[in-house]
Image 1 (cartoon, rainbow, N blue to C red):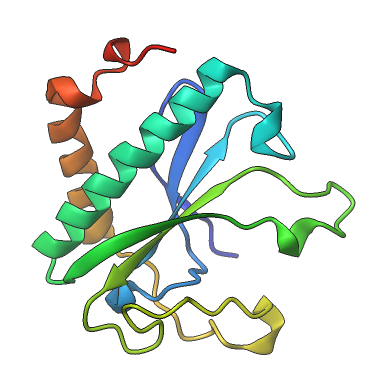
Image 2 (cartoon, one colour):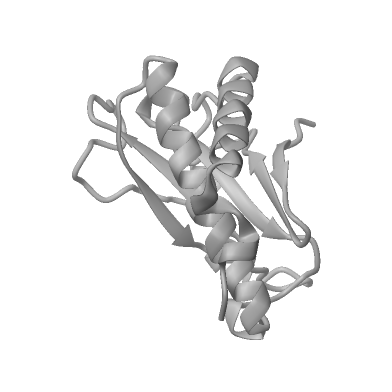
Length: 160
């Protein structure tokens, strides 16, 4: 069984490249942010955790945009979404996680400017979707490191 690949981690969240993506690589790719502790919803987060989640979301989105452009995928924007519907009837219930969907200007399946489609996995819709590759992940990590060196993304500059 394939496994999501760790791209970056903060004190309380993991950023991963999704091995079974909702958006194929050439359409913009798919990353996911997940808390290291199970929360059903963002309403369970402390204000400090909510700020950290927003911080990593912004950091990841900017790094993903730049990195994939550097890799030949013309990202026009990133969609950020909480999608818990598929786990609502599972015994463990829904869990908080944020999806980052790159939206490439020349996308073939999830066309730029249109809403993404998210049918259940068993429909086969995603079967041929390609995850971000090791080169993409390394470039995203490189961009994250560059952004962390800039004052804009230093966590000590974020206050409630």
